[in-house]
Length: 121
Image 1: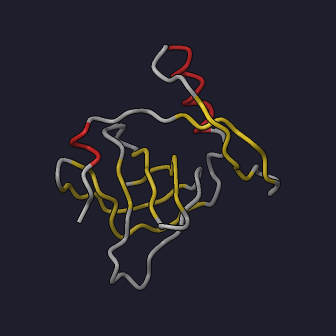
Image 2: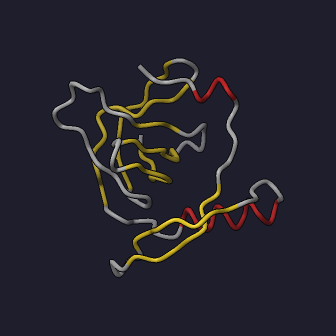
Image 3: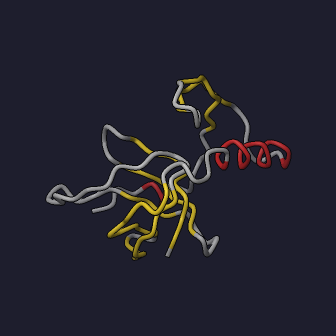
């Protein structure tokens, strides 16, 4: 399967991915024993295997196909969500623009169902 990284945490090496099947989002968090753990940035196009665990879709064996292939996707999804009244409330975060400079952007927290927030083993 392929997908685009919507959010990532470089420090803890986690990511949320929008899959090409447009199903539920998939989550990436390498196992502690993983030597070849990948690091992603929002906008990266990745290829991966998908598995399900604890009612969540889990990214496994990811490989980057293209860095920053969809640099505006997160902002575009946010705009659509705001127009539909689904997304509201933002706080400033730092993002890297396509030219490599840091810029302040609004980040929106969308509440997920409590069962989707379970820690993945």
